[in-house]
Image (cartoon, rainbow over all chains, first blue to last red; front, top):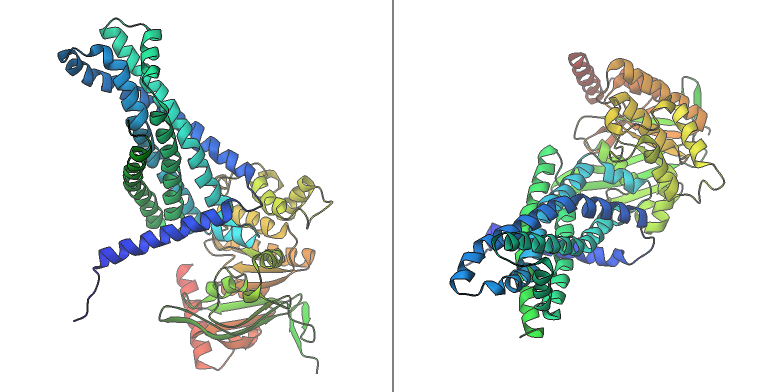
Length: 258
Length: 267
């Protein structure tokens, strides 16, 4: 009897292999001259600065909502003084990086997928290649570097604004000064909270850039192909973020067990 | 024996080495065999037009010349160098000798017209050593009649203007050969005629040889020194436009009839 793998599984395996090869190609070219500094800076600006407002607003609301939701329970247990500690650990360890990464997967992942997809469809990538430019290096390597470098900064911004939002609720509902709130919030943090969170943010950025570029670069011809590239970049990047997060927490648990 | 191909005011000697030489080129996509042993030579100062039905592999053919698509079998020589065997650096160098005008112009839509022209220039600064970038861009744009559009974005240009800017971008590195993929497609007859005249003018100004892929019979008639009909994956017929349009071969006859019918219908 002949055994055959279901098409959905073989497609998944094929795509996983293809994305891995794409990542290997990135590493092969990322450290080789010539470096596209100007394009890298432009991408850092586009990806980092242009996402800052959205990420800050999300972070702020995240801080407000989290505090509002948790406060009644903490009061019930007589542990309201633990609020800054609890909020800072939960935001910095998990909620900040994850929510920022998901927001960026939607905003940055889709825009990279659509941009590269439309460049592919309109033969701009081919035009770049025949003009003697390596389009992979110019378009893909710069974008993956930019997302990898910018996401940790965006996470730090979201964390900071999230804590500020939390303080606003705390000070309006209770009686806590800004200095006291932030003193308690930062005192409760250790390297075991900061290092894994920052490190995984780099990986989140890499995953978003990689998937966005992969989907756009391999977009099928036609306007439908561009839409599909943008959409599947968001879906796949979001899924990948949870996988990366799981492994990041698993590894952090080995090195930073309290 | 000296074999002269003549058409209108141009004459081309076949004694000279060809700039482009394709021998027995085969290319298939899965089971679909697109090229089944295609041969082509392009000589200095020559304009060769390739005619063929949609999906006959014309675009694949010119993409094979610059290795945007790898061939399965055969030989592709550009300026005497075997393109499939070139290393990336050598390939990039040879690509600077070949201009490529894409069907949809393929302008970088996040860049202005100036930046579009500056892009290949900066990449090959060595090649254009000693020349003032700004003056070169302005002169090239002037030669296509679009000096005023220098700071516009591609989205602000009409189809004909886009084609002109793309032509300027192709010319800026002063290539020896220009490949045109449907240079008049999607343009109205007046603009098409302007583009055809521009191609001829630029060819005499910049002294280039051209390989043109087109459906447009007017374009083929006006521009060509030699026409090749790509049918069933091979160069089925070859000659001047006038020779081929009066050919007795049933397939060539049917081809011309069908294309003319389609053109009349489109008009």
